[in-house]
Image (cartoon, rainbow, N blue to C red):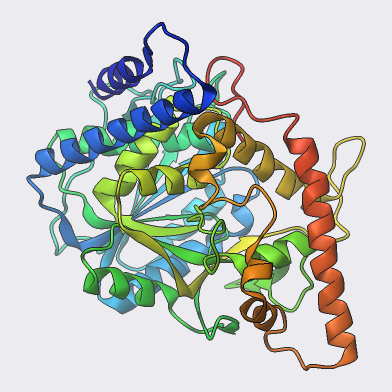
Amino acid sequence: MFLNNLLKLSNESRNFSPEKITLREKQNRTLSADVKSVLYYRDWIQAQTNHTFDKTRILGIVAATKGAENYLPYTIPKIIQQISEIGMTTDIVIGLNHGFECPGIIDRFTLLQNTQIIHLYTEEKLANNIPAPIFDNIMCQGKPYCLTNIDPYQYRHRIFVIHQKQGQYSAGKIRVLGDIYGSLLLKSIEHGWIPPALLMTFDAESQFLIARNYSVIDLESNGLKLIINQLLNSPEIDILGTRNKFAVYQKAIVDGIEVLLPDFSEELPPIQWFIDIAHGRFSSFQCKWGGGTFGKTDVIVSLLVVISINYPGIRTEDTQLTILSKYAGFIGDIFLDVISTNRTPRIADMTTEHPQRKAWIEQIYRWLTSVESLKLLYGKHNISMLVNIGFPWFTLTHPITFLKLVMANKSINLYTIFNQSKLLLLSFFYYYKIQSYSTKNPDILQGDRAKAFW
């Protein structure tokens, strides 16, 4: 029902009249078609729930693949702890992508107090844009599983672990997100589940911390509490992003298990350093990163259902979500007082393939090739105010504000001025060099040739 309606909406809107249209007109119509689909699903969810949502719980969604076992033992308990401190409860859905498993880590979650672990399993995907049915048994027999509202005297928190079957069409983060949003959540709503009012997207390594005055990070703070209170106290807000904070992660021992934690003292690669300064503060750096976006459940679900089904080759679903959110008329912003951590390689780290490349450059290249595909899809004229695809003019139009951020918490002396200036010049140099390559190789978003990341 969901898929048929969405594909019908999409096809009707894209059946352009036979007269010649310009590329700009085609891009505008594509954007309009996707927005129409998003609003259709938002209205459908509101009608199914009768505009009623569970205000006692928070829904969290994370996709995981190889390497996630290094972060989840710390981040999942921490998120549950932070939500408990607010006086709320949570349903966390962990999508294990393309046959990835980490049984030892999942077993540790059974030790968490007042937390129930529920294992779910997908059938093999029939196509890269068709959500797979989800069941509560590994044989995938019986009726597909649906979420239900629980008795308040049972478990306070639930962790749903979705084991996505490895298959021809399952590789890629957007594919497991498609199964979560397009199958589990929509089917459950159709069958009477009243979802939590608020939904949070996060990555395996995401930590949520308070960083007031733009730069000072409080390592013991509860960033979730601050941003959720902001949403609860501002019901007009539909979607709210955290401020991105790149960090190199280091090995540490937590509760007897080795994990990777952010080391904020480690020097960042130049482009990641620049993005952290600009994100959320200037035009064209307004993307709501998937590692920390919060909002109304009906809004985020409707956005990611459309993205995952229409564009199974997208690698930056968060950037596309930001674009569609704006044109759908959803009210949102970047909440500068809360950061979400985002792993970046060390400057010296190299990729494993041959020939080897600098890992931090590959991270930016992946992002820019996906942004290039969105520029072709929706048009530069429609996305430039949200996503940087050219020179960052704010460095010239707001030089004093920008320079204060560049020098934040640094002693003003010849060494720091030289060092920060060098980082700035390097970030510009590498960015335009990488961008020149990305424009020649945009991601393929649709069809059998679409290849998603991971």
